[in-house]
Length: 98
Image (tube, rainbow, N blue to C red; front, side):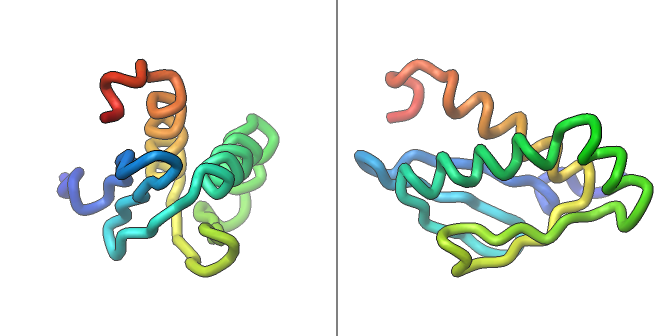
């Protein structure tokens, strides 16, 4: 069984409109607009049609993050985990994010 923490992605709120995306290989600082763009990209990649295409072809995606300053490699489980992290992040009460 793989080490779950080695492949996990996490989002942390740093300050007003400043966030961190923690990946297995690096930590990426994001502004609020960059967070919104990341959410939009992840939502597009996790539609049924997109997931079917990914599974039928390469089983991974390469995603530019933070205004194309960083490139991250996501396998299907990582992609789905990141989608869940983003959904929880945007739907969590503000007191939890501080």
